[in-house]
Image 1 (spheres, rainbow, N blue to C red):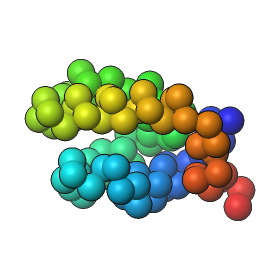
Image 2: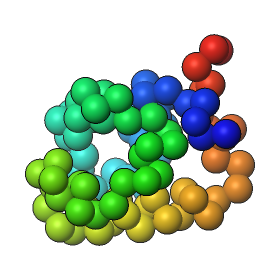
Image 3: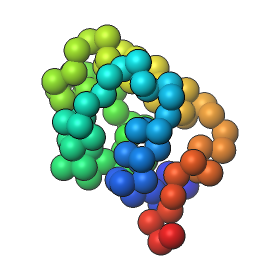
Length: 86
């Protein structure tokens, strides 16, 4: 199901999620997602080490990894993302 979500839908979801506000993700983070064409499915595969490669500090990388674990466990994630054809 997550394979259906495009990059811009993922970015919109991440920008609007209040759980990420404390991480202070800047535009460069979202630009990297866009440049690397990271879809919802690919985002869920990212690890703290990949985020570190993106230049994030360890705290941010660890918190994002925990956030991804929560997303994987959360039912109904699809209702928050917009499919490509809509």
